[in-house]
Image (tube, rainbow, N blue to C red):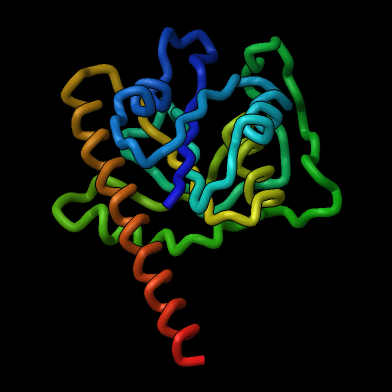
Length: 196
């Protein structure tokens, strides 16, 4: 199975980005890593140019005010920057695509993922607010353009090794879960094909 995981450069005056640190720490050989700029429209353009065929996309970003890991169920069709992107742009009240609805939703069964990840502790929750900055823009474009199961995960502003060690365990647990689900789907598909 081919899984692509993305992260972002630092932004908004932060010296680091939790998503970048989390991505670089991951040692799973079955994933493709892509680091994206925090700028419009470059974040999506770089992803589109860099991504190869894959079966699942995990987008990582940092939400500094949050205290827990959150998985976004939807992206909003709006750009409303409270701070400049890394190109100095401030975009206000701009629709991403006038031909699309207000929200685009992930096709992934997020509730099942969260239940699995929270089996031992309440580490993750489902969010319906991906913001209106670059994270939301990227998620919207991926849900709009790619016919690939995709989720966006917002991380707190982690700083300590202990926090990143726990996050690494959580992300590897997520990757393993996705791979097992994919394998089960493939087995079921092969059985159906064999019957037919």
